[in-house]
Every structure is written in structure tokens, then in C-alpha cells.
Image 1 (cartoon, rainbow, N blue to C red):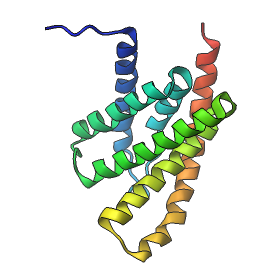
Image 2 (cartoon, one colour; image 1 turned 30 degrees about the vertical axis):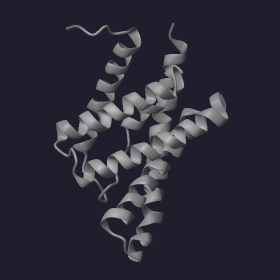
Image 3 (cartoon, rainbow, N blue to C red; image 1 turned 45 degrees about the vertical axis):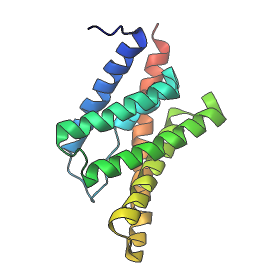
Image 4 (spheres, rainbow, N blue to C red; image 1 turned 180 degrees about the vertical axis):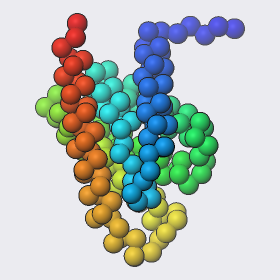
Length: 169
């Protein structure tokens, strides 16, 4: 049995594979704090959102989280749940921002919003499921500060890549 595929299916597969590769490479980077990663796979999500729309960005992100966790070996672990919660919040904020602001919001702005939403989603899930203790709130400003810095870094990368892609025929 063969399933017919479209050009969009192939594009999603290629972009998801790229996002998965970045996700796996990023997992090898040592973390300054538990849960703090640069979020470079977010660059792919933001570029897909800007170039192909929210629906395709959702597919690429869901495939990245699922397949990346299977490859790394974190599927259905707390790490997977935190990653999925962060990705879900990030996608929700990106979708809302893209719908409200459209092209007026740059890749840098989208990456910063996505990074802050991702960390907020992870933090809320960690609070709700794992560590419902008031002391955890003391970490929130530090985690959001890291998110802001990494969002600026990934946003700068996304902006440069978007500029290059926009210029090519």
C-alpha cells in the first residue's frame, strides 16, 4: 500500500528532520542549569512559521519533540513532558503573535516570545507535576533571564537566516 504524498508533506519531513538534528545536537551541549538550553531548534520553528505558516510550524515542532525524544531516549520521561509543555506554550504564543502582528513582528521578536513562553510552560508543568513548592518561584527570574538571552541569540540567528532566504530566488 502506498500513501500519496504532497510537496508540503515532503517539505514538512525535510524541515522536521533539520529541527530534529538541531534538537539532538543541542542535547549534547552541557547545561548551566537544569532545563536551560539555547533553544536553537526554535530557529527552525520560527523560520517555518514565517515562511510557510502556523500549521506547518506545528507539524515540524510536534515531529521534532516526538522524534527527538525517541532518538535521545527521553520519550514519556519528565524531560519529554517538559519539552512538550514548553513547545505547546511556545506554539500557542507564536500562533497568537503571528495572527495579531503578522509580518510586523520580526524573527527576533518571535524567538524572544517563543523562548519566554517555552520556559513559562516548562516552569508551570514542573510546578504542577513535580515540585509544587514556593521555593521554586525563586528560580523563575533566573530561568526567564536565560530564556531572554537565548531568545535574543536564536532570534539573531533566525533574522540572519530569514534575510538570506528572503533574498534567494
